[in-house]
Length: 82
Image (cartoon, rainbow, N blue to C red; front, top):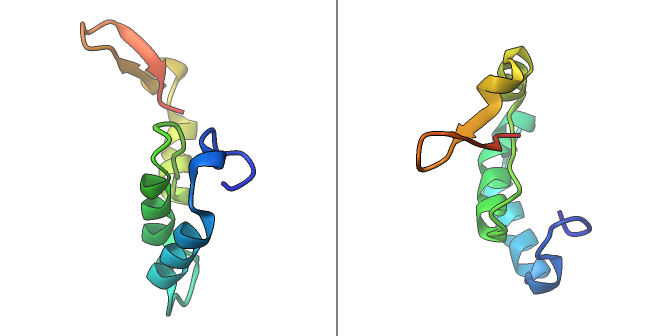
């Protein structure tokens, strides 16, 4: 995130990292960290980055490209969901 986020120069990385680590404290496995990762990405606020759990990623792999297109406000196809 820190190296590749579009807003990397605008983020208080020590705070974002500390908050994420606090949320993940006590995690006993990867799945226990997902909420902390998702919140860190929301806190990043770049409107671009997203996190897919392994389950969501597997479902996305099974979709056709048309299933991955989000509709625009006028109902026509728009930006990709990936």
